[in-house]
Length: 344
Image (cartoon, rainbow, N blue to C red; front, side, top):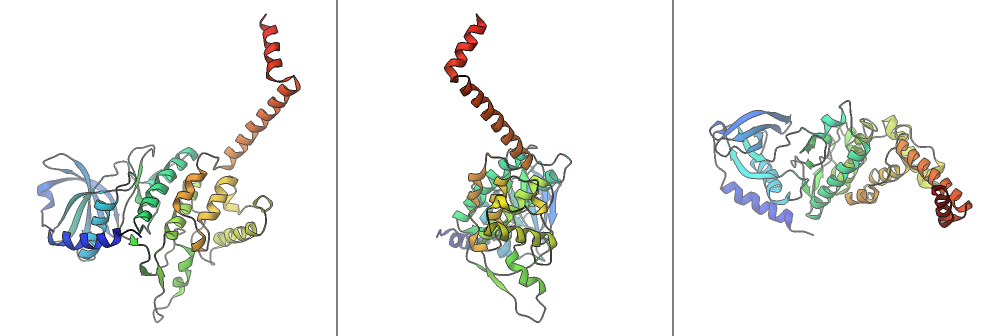
């Protein structure tokens, strides 16, 4: 196993010693708010002296420990070397009310805004985005880290057409094998293995789970569905959700018979057989059976939408019929002879 998680602890200790205090307005011109969440807010800023655009991420000191701030900063600046991971820029400081660090700015918004737009995301664009993300997440995993918060709002655009995207927000990232408290939340990105935490009463002991790459694999599967359909496959990944139950029923029936013999779950009826095979792997309810993120790469290039699959089959059939006609007429050489006589 890589030593990166151990190095991260050492980096946090060292950077704590060199933390400096600054007045933001003396060094940066704040342009506009790029995002906001439970962690704090992200502002687009320009360095006063250098004129460099960047994003400043503000963490309220009242709700953020120094250790959590430094962990996210050092993970981003030292280990996010993949081109599709958002990297910190080496600037970090504190103010009386916030901890702050600078990172690469996603000047064109996030993937959520594209998904919910009228135009949506094309099939080709979906594959382009997933190619980048699967590679980026595989890089994180190779270092021993699990992101744990992959969702459209945390994927930032470097251009309007999604030719280059970056996964960001590493506040929940943890080393693989870490024991964390299982927290259920109402979202399809929440893995089904934490369902027992949904009904946990205040008097019951917490449920603990091990951080594994399968958490990110599940999120990538949900993301593929969102990109292709502009909606979620279900509201929550629990036995209470009718749409999720339909999926599990279909998943189990396919496991017992050939996929072509089983009618697809309603919410998947616009997707091709190729991407359905991929989603069954990524969205396996059994976490240990989910593949690594780079499994996605072997499914690129083929049809992911049913209408595209049908069109490809129609073209293949036309080509087959045309080839048969050519053979019936005596093959390629005979065809050349016929064309030659026509030209004369």
